[in-house]
Image (cartoon, rainbow, N blue to C red; front, side, top):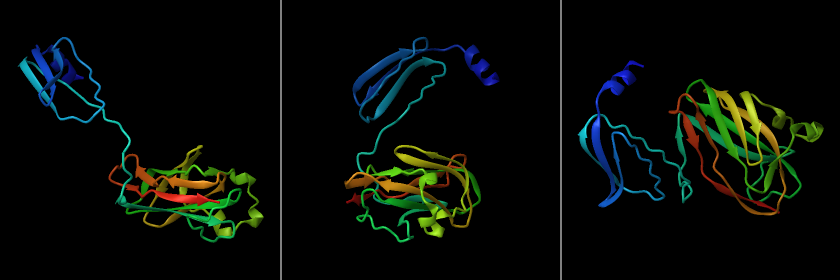
Length: 212
């Protein structure tokens, strides 16, 4: 665009140094750029001599070393509840290997939203079951209902992604899982966000389940 043309036509003649504390990490100039990878968080300082415009960017990624200790939410609430086929709630320590259970996701937002993504990560002891393989005659009717407007549902090995719309009413979505492996497993937090309105989001707390 015009801004890029104006920047390219402006003369630049500078040299720069990048420090972490008093340690020199890299040097560069207006002709030769530099790229640097840092494995540890550090306080950086940039020194420039000369004239012209300098452009820089950084990309940060990582995994938290500690689980969250409180729910983070803004304009949206989300819950996950497990039921057996008769419609009874299942405590976290009462899953039995080989049995089928139903996950109920309940979502509500302060405004009508589209392009919401619910990310329900599964614990290692559970796996998603094809809903078509479940005998509906032996399932409580309320577990077969769905009033959440879904655009797409992506069933993966480690999670279920629900692309949907939400509003001020509590909407529910059900899907079946099977307890497979016996043991004690970490349950990742449930989360959701609106892709084009990031002010609406929710991240719950991690937990644990036991499969016996």
